[in-house]
Image 1: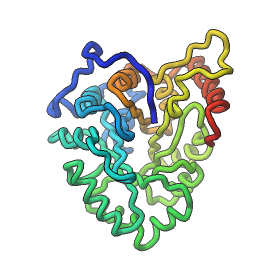
Image 2: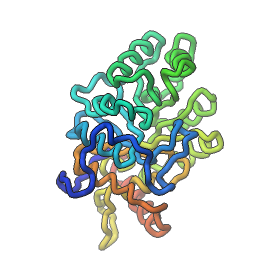
Image 3: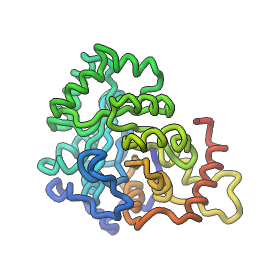
Image 4: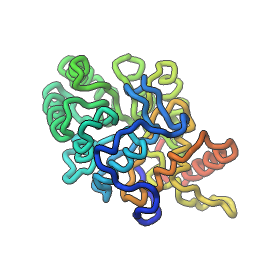
Length: 308
């Protein structure tokens, strides 16, 4: 989702690792960076932290971010199999009594009732919890996939039962297919969507957000850095152009009011420290700076590949 160079890890940036007892306080950031409680059951810092494969991120790093006010954790779950040594699952276990202060979102690969029952049991066991705040059905890319999940015997029915029991608090889907995600959103069967949105891929502004905003359906945005391309130069950059660092691109995604949370997935503590500078924002980007990011996003889209 995001990789970015940053300053070397250290203890001079006010991001000391904290114990589980110290973590989980309500965010104290500017209202621009807060999502109201109605979206996920409690106020959420709009910069979320995501796991993504094997990284150098440690349990202390995750808990440190929580201590800074990041209280939305997106775990890749078991949709692509277990990730040995995953810091996110261990960090959630370490939260202990502070667990209710953090919204834990997991990707969910099951398609049938039987698969869903087994996967949910495994997810809860790994997290050391008796509930999960958000499950997003992982990469629903075709109508036929959604039809299977929503049909009798599909995973959705099982998850809706689990939601009534309180084991699952909210259900969503993750998809690259914006129009399909928007169509599914209108069924009333979901509590959120997770879709790609960044300065190089702005299709959600026309395909998704006009649907989700009237429904008050929160959107979780991923790939804010366009896999690291946005903080890099392009051959068409104007003379003297200074490529913006990752925090600017997260702020770009957060500029749109339809985005409830945008996810950062740092690979190292240095990247995490840099990403957390978003929390220093005192409001939206200035109009001129936003326009600069838009222009660079268009150049990145031209040169970085043919994703819609």
